[in-house]
Image 1 (cartoon, rainbow, N blue to C red):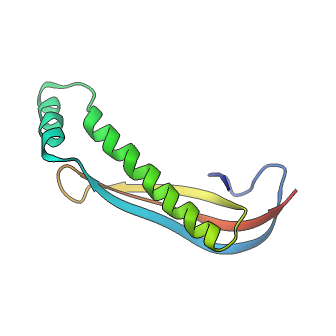
Image 2: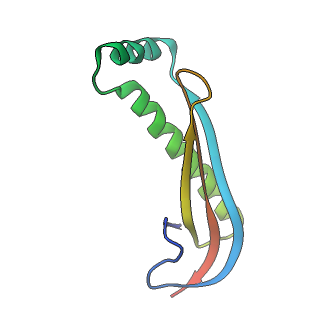
Length: 105
């Protein structure tokens, strides 16, 4: 599955737009990592615990979007965009969306 943020796939022609596909998730770290992350927020430094949570959330949302594109028998997803927000302290929501398309070389 080709996935791009551009509105086209270089070297390919878009035959058909199949529709918008999306994936999203809300993630939280367990209490121990949330406490460590909170301490880092006080003393400063890279907040690895939250970075890890965000990366896991993004990967999950991408996989969900890709699966929905496969269900439509898409060859690619174009125009991919990401959105994130915090639902509450220590949580992250990530949404990813794009247009599922059929392409030919």
